[in-house]
Length: 151
Image (cartoon, rainbow, N blue to C red):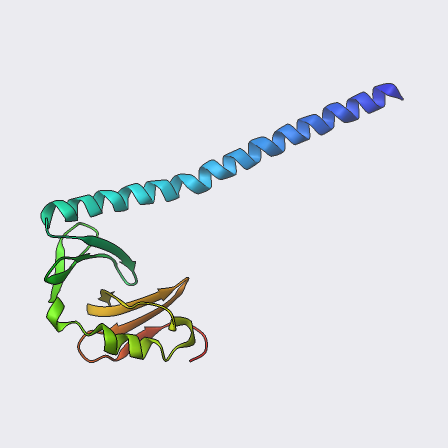
């Protein structure tokens, strides 16, 4: 009887050790690609900041393309994932108040600040909450994309 308990204890210990190894590998394989992606994004942001010395803040957006919006004193400049300039808009042309009014007609975006981004083929206002996204055309203020729930 004692021999049976000893074998059971050894088996339980081996199973416990195996579970620890499996959980460790899951952590490595899940966080590894995320860390690699963050490194790639940081390299792109560094290139953008090197090209545009006036850049104060860079924000990453992902819709149809991955783009990076650089905010400077006088303009918003949008770059692609190769750090090439796609578009630019003067700060004087931006009307965040009107875009925020449109965004706030949607329940999810009551407390969200609209940012400049890139939607479809042009500059747009972008609001994101979790996986819900709202894209408003920069010039016409038409809602180009909304993937959320209730309006």
